[in-house]
Amino acid sequence: MTINLKPEERLDDLQIKGYHIIQHPGKFCFGMDSSLLSSFVRVKPEEKILDLGTGTGVLPILLAAKTKGKHFTGLEIQEESADMARRSVVYNQLEDRIQIVTGDIKEAASIFGSVSFDVIVTNPPYMIGEHGIQNEKDAKTIARHEVLCTLDDILRESAKILPFKGRFYMVHRPFRLAEILSKMVQYKIEPKRMRLVYPYIDKEPNMVMIEGFRGGNSRMTIEKPLIVYRQDGSYTQEVLELYQAEH
Image 1: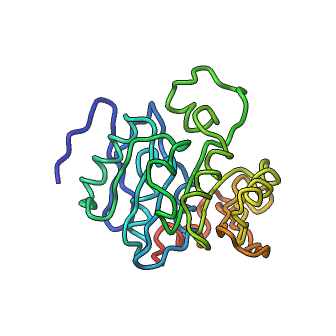
Image 2: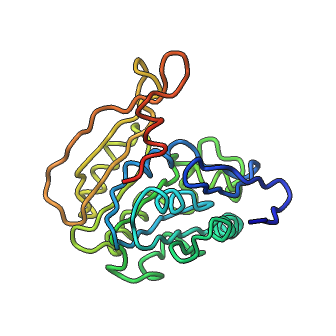
């Protein structure tokens, strides 16, 4: 299928099922965190999934490739990113499984209604405060900093949208782990499974992936660490398998 790219946009190969994604290097491009999260998420057949802050739609597309979920919705406040996501959905001929909605995470429950999705996934802004911010309207700033939404906004709206025992998945930074776990409990999304991601075996973790159950019991499993790179800088075998894994 041919596609008309706008100036500076590029079409990147997702290396799974022939799917591609439109990105703009000057705005924001997805990273390894989204790819790893898509393999951490558990989706059952016939389930409906919502991605809060979908950006250019990488998580819905990867989850459509890796799982048997019935339908995926991406919510994105930046119209330029949402437009790229919609065009990627069309390019991959996934219109019957993926919908991109322009809207604010802070209003997600009003947009979609309560108990409207079985699973919520999110790769939210990691940074708090104004450290490093030069332009609050810049696409990269919005993606990286809590400018337009906070962790509280995400968890509050997720708690309204998910049914009892509905599942919540998030990738974040370990330096905020204590805050993340306490806020999840506060909003009655009980942490159930966690995995830390290490760039190298002898380095500190730089990512954490968390699964929570809406209204679940207090019991959490800590999975074995995920090491991304061998000492020579090549991917570990597990990471290579996760990139292609279907489940």
